Amino acid sequence: MKAGIVGLPNVGKSTLFNCLSNAKAQSANFPFCTIEPNIGVVNVPDPRIEKLEELVKPERVQMATVDIVDIAGLVKGASKGEGLGNQFLGNIRECNAIIHVLRCFDNDNIVHVDGNVNPIRDKETIDIELQLKDLETVEKRLEKVNRAAKTGNKEAQTEKALLDRIRETLLQAKSARTVTPQSNDEEVLMESFQLITAKPVLYVCNVDENSAVSGNKYVDQVRELVKDEDAEVIILSVGAEADITELESYEERQVFLEDMGLNEPGASVLIRAAYKLLKQQTYFTAGVKEVRAWTINIGSTAPQAAGVIHTDFEKGFIRAEVIAYEDFVHYGSEAKCKEAGKFKVEGKEYIVKDGDVMHFRFNV
Image 1 (cartoon, rainbow, N blue to C red):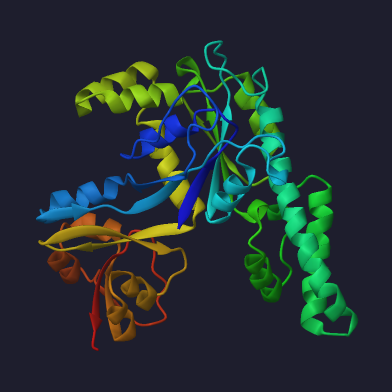
Image 2: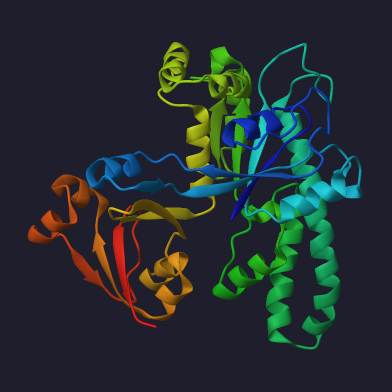
């Protein structure tokens, strides 16, 4: 599962990517310095794993990760191949969610591709290009399905009805994610269309350092604009985050954050938000060899969760032994949880909860 960072050139995408990832995307003050998509595998900050490490004292610790993709800046006309349009659209299609970076700071030294700072216009530029590309996809698909629908084919009629609704939405300059599937069949179809504007989105307002805590007039404009989109808005001073990553010690970073009025780096908030945006959650395995956070889709069953460790665990699944994270921390060990009756044995139907501490029994 991958989240792609998108935005106009020079809004801070590559600098943000550098803050999130150990991989260093080229970051320069001109458009298209990121030609190939850069992929960073980023640890998901989670204080729970630190607590488990403290209690279990394992030989090693493995955190959950999320893949972040830095995609080349898009310009007006991208849907028709302008700039790096086709490449950009292909790269974003391969991502499962979108982190949309908007420039919300004034700085005469950093050129804006359209001449002045206006996050509303910038958002609309990107939205329109993505919507135009989706409209092209929908109309091509409608050409194919119209003929079959006329013959009375029920499946084709269902598909046509959904495509017509999506087309109408896109023509109104709204994204496909605002179309709600009316049935399971429509949900499956919606997924199969792979529309760019159907992907979940998170907006990152890149602000100056002084606005990192409470935002500014530009952030207020963005919040007002997206209030009906069911999308989270995060405030981040990408320049300050870049400065924090350059500091050597944890203590120095904490002092910097305190001076800014922050409890933790904004990058940590963003990574967790991206993880949630991808509809992912964590369960833990905790033993003396290793304490590890495993990533699963929200709603996964115990066998599916076991399969993340190894496919044999899922094939030969017998049962899951489960302790809620809060109980593990409260009682301090697996043995004490058993004594207190907080150790549960679950079967194939069990839906894993975020933070469950689990062991699996299997036989292949």
